[in-house]
Each structure stands twice: as structure tokens, then as C-alpha cells.
Amino acid sequence: MNKIFGPFFPYSPLPDNATGATKRLLEANPFAPFFYEESTGKDYYEIAEELKSQTEPGKYAFLSLDLDDRVCCVCYEGFDGCTPFSGWKIAVVPVENLPKGIEYDLGDVALKDGKFVYTYFRSIQEAKLHKDKEIAWASQYIQTYEDYEQVTGKKLPEHMADILKKLKIYRCEVLSIKTEDAPNITWAIRPSVE
Image 1: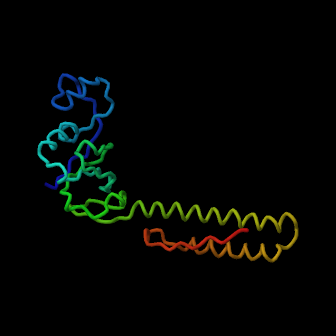
Image 2 (image 1 turned 180 degrees about the vertical axis):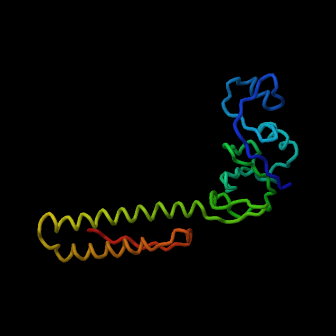
Image 3 (image 1 turned 90 degrees about the vertical axis):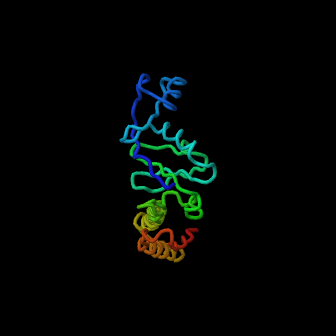
């Protein structure tokens, strides 16, 4: 079995029309806030209950796929362990078909046309944040050193001028990094500001 369910969308089941797992959940808590269904009208909890009887424990993984089919959750305990969000899908995949270590690559792997592909989306986003943080850090110190000359009217002492030069070089090195190369990026080392 290699099957994708969804996308799922929130809905409010009517107690009189609910069946199976959905009905039991409503009876236990009539104000349960989260119900999702496929466009076919099939409820998430009903699908989970069906799959529980059709799949052998430990043989299948259940994956939450976001709007771009990126794997955001891997669950080995059953379909209902993967929470869908609006528009998300759930995939059922034999464990032997999973990429090794997928649990550590969540957000970087997508399931496209039945195959796992590395998009490195999460790594690229993290690299963009890191790049912005490092540029801001260097810029803050560069501005501070430049303020020294402007405010005091004195030339920077030699050791401070050397630090300023290293900070500017560092900022240029970080600026030149291509974040789309993540996770294979070698980051420049921050210069000492002491």
C-alpha cells in the first residue's frame, strides 16, 4: 500500500449524520473542535479507523504532507498520529520505502508522484535566517565603529580599524553566500570584536 488521503479541510459534523469513529468522538465530546474531511466527504477519523484494521503495525509509516507535499510528520503508530491541517494530506507508505533518516529531514523532503525528493526547503529557510542574522550582527558593529570616528572626531585606533576592516570583509563574505545551496554551506567565521 502506498496511498495518499486528502487534502483534508475542517468541517463540523452533525451528530445525527455522524458514523463510526466520528460519532463516538462526538458522543464523548460534543464540542470537539477539530474535524477534518476529504473532498469525498470521508472523515479523517473514519479513514484512520479503517486503516488501523488494514495495516500491520510497524510495516507502514504515516506522513503528514503540507500544501507543497513536504513531509512534516512521520508516525509509525497509526494514521491518527499525524494531524492534518487545512489543505494537508496524509500518506501511508511502507516503512522500507522511506528515505533513511527522514525523521531528521522534515520539511526538506517532499513526496512527489509517489517518490521522495529532497527540496531542502527547511534548510534554505534556516540559511536565509542565519544569513540575515549574521549581516545584522556585523552591520551593528560596523556602525558602532564608524560612529566612534564621527562622534569623537578622532581616527580609529589601529586595533579598532583592524576589527572594522575584518567586520566589513566578514559581512561581504556572508552577503555572497547563496542560501539555495543549503544545507551545503560553509559559513565564514565571525571575527572577534574584542
